[in-house]
Image 1 (tube, rainbow, N blue to C red):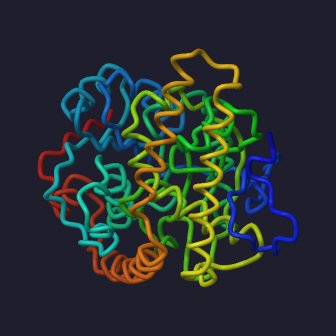
Image 2: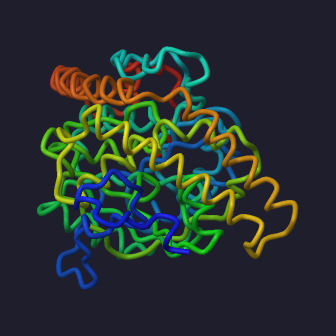
Length: 377
């Protein structure tokens, strides 16, 4: 099934097409030689407290605080009770929309309601970066609440690599964490691979000047700077818990803009290009190629080894992808990347202006969160 995404005969090296793997952009470190401590584990959580059980135990093993940034079904008081039972140092706060962080131009693009991303994952991760800047934490791990089987030594190895890299992610040995379109590619027989992401990564906060935009694949954009991909490594392993990517068509719609942008940029980087190469002509070709690829997926779905119900839901998801992409124009893609560059400058200025505040409770209050719970055994 590789012909679903293969390069047309005679196409140039930087043909605007989907790539099934971006792993060549990463530095794989299988035998790390240096281990270091972590200053904190930051978990943006929206699920009930029980989902934090693994992260709490990991924080205990690594002897560092766990920062729980809570919303929806997660609440700071519940995290505090769990931390007391386990004897784990925890800083938990309920995140709301009055947080004092910059207003980003990228958040207003596109300006149509259909493109508005639901959820606050990017906001929480940016909060984690700002909090770490203020408290002086430097080697910080981001860990999602649906990640399991992280070995403490893999986290220490990742921390030890930060002198050489701008981000170190753990390799995913569990359920593939891809977009809906990429899951559909895999389902019809394409060897679609995964990439590192914000679900399990360690960053050097003092050298980090990028932010997480409010868009799908926000972690891929976090890894970019003006020159392209920051030096990024992968080591160790983690397990992503399974989920159903085809449960609703809303997921495909919500991902399409960010997936088109990220896959397009990373395809350029794979081919030795740069973000500057993503002009109107590139986006016109890439969006057309993606549409043709999704058409081929729809044609292949009836022959894939899935239940009739799942094949139906896959088809509906791919049609939803088509529907949303009709509103994505080359001009919109170019304007978004221009806004992203401007937003990075806004973020750099903001984090440089943040006061030093070693007390996490006061630091979070400065950022607009004044109901933080802290337990320190």
